Every structure is written in structure tokens, then in C-alpha cells.
Amino acid sequence: MSIVDWQVLTGQSRVPLVAVAASAAHYLHHDALPHWMQLVNDAAEVGFDLQIASAWRGFERQSLIWNSKATGLRPVLDAQGQPIDISRLSEDELLFAILRWSAIPGCSRHHWGTDLDVFDAAAVPVDYRVQLTTEECVGNGVFANLHCWLDEKLQEPDAVFFRPYCRDNGGIAPERWHLSCKPIADCYERLLHEEKMLDWLMTQDIALKDRIAVHWHDIFQRFVRVAMARA
Image (cartoon, rainbow, N blue to C red; front, side):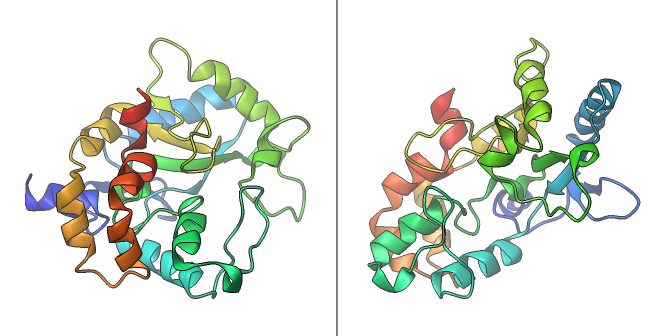
């Protein structure tokens, strides 16, 4: 693996990234961008304004999120999306509670520029804050119609995007809003190496890394190399 590949894999490089729009609010891998624009156009043809809530996220940003949750500066949520009193949790319980919704820094698919969280801007009510929750995506949820369309769109034979977290397999919580550009993301996922990643993580300033080391094999299988495992 080249140094550039490793840095991209772990969120330390912007080399393959391009801005999605002139505002440069979001970045994607340059090979993923044309596929994204095609999906946006397809959605527009049936009345959806497909927009990005979150795309590329670097190692430093992911570290801030992770460490803030581990230290109580950000809420940690249970499986139902409700805040947990982390003072009642052991370090192992806290680790897996955070993992339910947040990737370990260096292990996020958002590092690759291939994955993004989406919503329908045309359906957003005035003064509504997009939350990216299951409730928004099903039943009478504000984005339910978009996700019904995506259910069919992502099953087409030539579909490029897929949902890596579409089912609850006891690892990362289902995220219907999370799309991944499969041909490019698969290339990065194949680079994930269990031992090498652990060795590197142990050199980083990451909260709970001693407990991560203890449970690493389980974490790697359930929370890191998940899409390949489901293929």
C-alpha cells in the first residue's frame, strides 16, 4: 500500500478530493463526484432535491467527535437515539456505546470521499433542522418518500451507490441516509488490514484506545470492515 493510499484510508489526506459545488461545503473523491451528480439529476427528475448533509470527514474532525463523546463533551446515544448517562458505564460499555453511532478515528468510511449522508431539501419544513434519524426516513417521516425512491433506485442493475449500514447486525446502527459509492469504496475497504490499523491506532491520541486494543478483532469485524462482510 502506498503512503498516499494509507493517508486517504485513514482520513489524513485530501489528495483525491474535489469540492461538490462552488461553495466547497462538501468534498467527494473525484471519481465519485460524477456518479453523485447523476444520482442528483435522477432524483430531480422525480421531484427530489437530493443534498448532502455530510461527506468527507478527516481524521482530526473524527477525533474531535470521538474524544468529545468519550469525555462527556458530546452526548452518547443508546440504540434508540436517546442520551446515555456515561457516568454509569464501564469503559468497555462506553466504547461500544460510542461505536454504535460513531467510527473510531482513522476507521470511518467518511475518510475516503466515497460516502455521504443525504436528505431531500425540497421536503425540509421552514425552520426544520435535519437530524439524520430513522424516524425521518420511514413511515410519515419528512424524508420517507425520498428513501422509498432510493430503495428502488439502489436495486437497479447499474446502481453505483448502496447503503453500507442498511441492516442492524449488532454493530453500527442502521443509517438509511448513508450512501456509499461502491466501486471506489470497495477499493479502499480492501486496503483495511486488521493488524496494521491497530498498530497505527495505538500511536494516535484517541480516547479509550487501550480498550480498543483489547476488543480490536471484534471491533474490526463488526464496525470497520462491515460492507465486505455483508457482501
